[in-house]
Structures are given as C-alpha cells and as structure tokens.
Image 1 (spheres, rainbow, N blue to C red):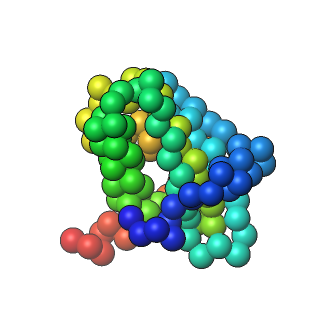
Image 2: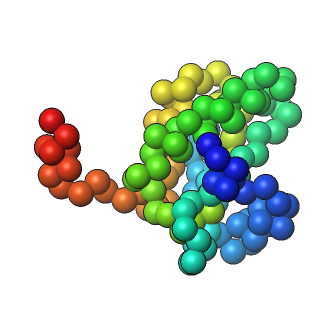
Amino acid sequence: MKKEFRVKKNKEFQDAFKKGKSFANRQFVVYSLNKPGQEHFRIGLSVSKKIGNAVTRNQIKRYVRQAFHELENELKHPFDYIIIARKPVADMGFHEIKNSLIHVLKLSKVMVKPKPGMADKQS
C-alpha cells in the first residue's frame, strides 16, 4: 500500500480518536473520520506489544493492509480509518482477519455496496 494511503502523524491519530466514530468487534476497533476534500481513504494501524513479538505484529499489519487493498473499491473514500488490533488477532490467518474487518466495517456503515449488475459484466 502506498504511503499516501497511510495515517502516520500522531495528531492525525488523535483527531480520529476525538472526532471520529468508533466501532468494534472482538478482534478490532475501527475509528472512521470523514475528511472532505481528500481523494482517497487512508489507514492508520495500531498493534500493541501485548499482542506478540515484532514478527507477529508486523504480520498482522501486513494482513490488515492487504485486506484494505482488496476492499478498496467497497470503502467510502474521503475517510481516515484507524484500526486497533486486539489480542485474538494474534492467532488468526489472513482470511479470518479480512472477514473480521469486513464485519466491523459493515457495522460502521462505511462499506458501499457494489453496483448491481457489475458482477454479471465481469463474466
């Protein structure tokens, strides 16, 4: 995922925590903050040291980035998303993480439904 798709600065994280809306399931907490005028969505990741060693934490971050990359066309775009991983994520594979993210993103109503008939045209 390109750098312009990432939230890096502490101030941007704090803005999302203060002004954004949060939604959670057992594996993730997602803060979403609408950023009008922004061309695309951005994600910020937080994986605590309590979850595992550096290898585990980095793998979780890679899986989350890949899941967002695959869901790119289904997300509302002028948003910043802050994803906080919780302990159960350490024992999950990529598909479980992706499904859990889809669940929490649907709860937060930031996923847009694909237009009807689009799946038919790809066949």
